[in-house]
Amino acid sequence: MDPSTMLLGHTLPQLTGESQFGQIAINDYLADFCGLIVTFPSSHHPVWLSELGILQKLSCQFEARQCRVVGLHIATLVQQRQFLQHVNDTHKAQPNFPIIADADAHLFHRLCLCQENAAECVADVYSLQFSATILIDLNHIIQSISYYPISTGRNFYETLRLVDALELANSHRVVTPCNWKMNDDVFIDPLLTNSDARALFPQGYHEIQPYLRLTSSTALEQYDAYYEENGEKQV
Image 1 (cartoon, rainbow, N blue to C red):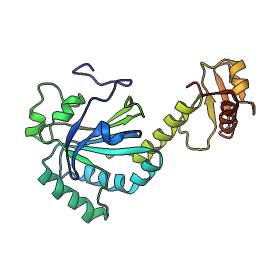
Image 2: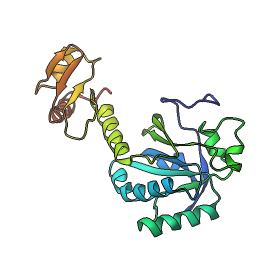
Image 3: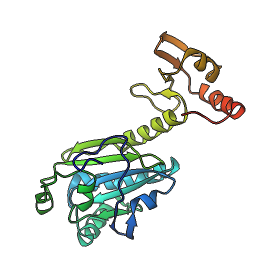
Image 4: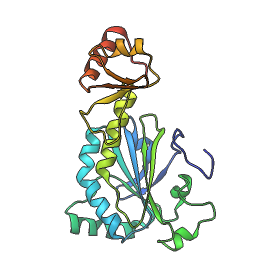
């Protein structure tokens, strides 16, 4: 990985640190799951407090999608413990996913979330002006990175939607339109030929343009049935 850049398609580096549950190696913790790394550049900030409360309430939905959540927090374990108590006091939610206390921002640097000379991002907790959300696939390949200013809370319902869309795209030859949600119609992969599309989607599709072919989510069941008869999926 380029020391100053982290891009989609890069492999997640080995990341190990101390969490509220003891030492954790993120790559081992994810095992055969997808992963969601959520960063919090400091403690005692109202936006991140609200995010942790919602993340805990949604954690079972991520688990149901075979996606494990990991927090990365510029704080000591003592600072983190106090902050997590505030989360519990205000949201009646004690995070059950590991949150690594990265007091010296070492892991933030490994993920290219601080500039190489940005030691001051530890000394001044508000000098890092964004939080990051990183989605990783089963092979620990980075699939999505988003950055939010510290003034604005993230929408983790959108993150769930992204997990669903990526899973669908990776397991079927489809892409999802703007504002797509589960059970909505999808587009057939524009790289798929019409002959292959007819074989994979026998229920049919609506062609608006050669690259714009719409099919229903129920057609994906027939897609799966096709591969059960004809061999392993090529995705």
